[in-house]
Image 1 (cartoon, helix red, strand yellow):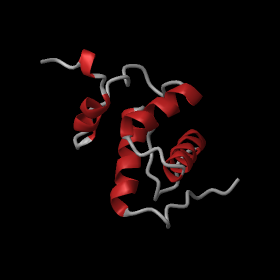
Image 2: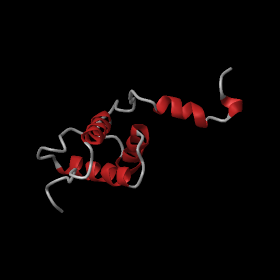
Image 3: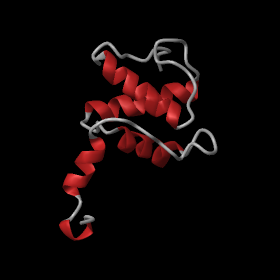
Image 4: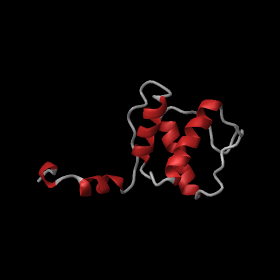
Length: 99
C-alpha cells in the first residue's frame, strides 16, 4: 500500500469537498500531507466512490460511516452548503412535499 493519496486527477474544489467530508466524519489529516493509516483508508474509499459517481458530501459521509463507523463521537451532524438541498427537494415524492 502506497503512503500517498493520489489526487492528481481531481479538481481542487473536489479535493476540498472530500477533505471536508473526512473532517466532518472525524478523520484528522490532510490529503496532501503525510496522513495516518486510518485517514488514508477513508480517503481512498471516498476518492474511489467519487470516481464511481457518488458526488454528494452527505452520501460520501454515509458511505464512510457504513464502512468504518464514525472516527469520533458527535460527528453525526454534517452541514454542507450548496445546491444539494434543492436537489433533494426535487426528488422528494409530491405527497411528502410541504405545501
